[in-house]
Length: 474
Image 1 (cartoon, helix red, strand yellow):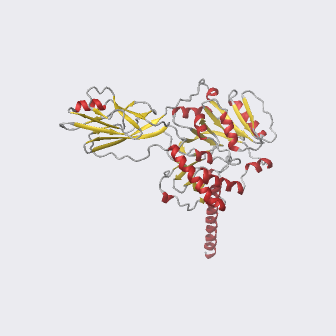
Image 2: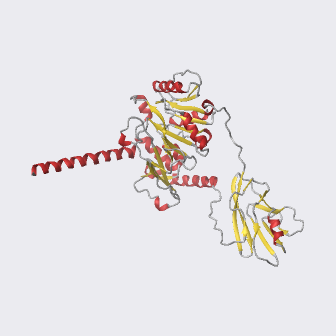
Image 3: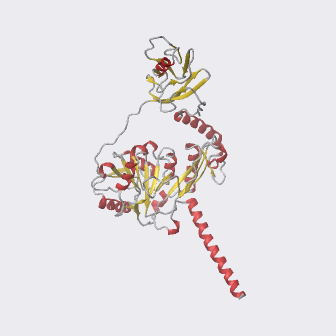
């Protein structure tokens, strides 16, 4: 009996060690790498879990614990100069994007009626302020005033001369009758006196001891950029890819596309040292200087798209019978606010959420695999996320506004979505799938594709300055 018990305990210990060993190995791989697109084990599949909230403005949560501190990748003899230069650039950046960010608190039980949001004006143009009114008990005389900082106020058709300060920044209205005051308030106009395409002002509205403050959004109206075309998929979507050396893989991809979509346009950015000419109907191959890199090629390909959407694929993907671009478009058109819809590669749906904490000394950024924000209503298996795989449909104009950083030559994917955080609305959908060709070793390709330690350090230093980060964790 002792012999059996001893062996049983040994066997139990071995089983526990094996299980923990596999978990630790899987955790270590996920720390450093995005899982392989093809052939993952069933237990490696991502189970959707709600994400933690994206945080901002809490400096105590950005202390770089368990994260990569980016200062260590900067030249020590240039550190002070780099930090000073970065602070200057960040201040200018804040000025460029700043709107009226001050918090406005409405006082309780005010007799003043006014617009709390949505009052937008064009610079230097007169605009009627909507909704101004006074609600109060009987007074011997009713007096209200309005003042602004970046414009002037007027009342149209003041025939009884009950308004003082016409065309000035301070306007006073008085009358013995409340109805007359409200009649004048309904005709108050605002005209900005500064020219700016994107700024704001505050209106101070007063009656006796009551004061209300509301914002004016000063915006130069933007001209819409729309995409014309037919209703068929060829008129709505262009397929884009970037290739380097792997012409055998690229040809398999093209052939698989043509089996399903014989007429759709394919745009290829090619930075191979010795380019091979690709022939075929509706194929555009753009030759680049050798080894310009991943993101430079993406920029070139997307710059040539003339359709409303483009579908991004890697050059070693393969269309399957169930690869249907129409499904992507259906989701996009049902949700006009979406910018990017990602799919699955070889049946595997990989996505990430980003946690970004702002800090005066630089922000903290962390990436979490398999975490989403919320499901996309009406579409099972679709989730709001921040980072997706290299198989996605995107709105052409939205992606162009973000762009791909050509500094990143060898590896760059999450980095695009970091730049697009808060600018692109992204979802990932499990039922939109494409195949992945079998990986084959290619020495020259691998040398130019895989990041070495020096490239990683340069990328971290780049994040420090460009994204105003002080620490990061992928």
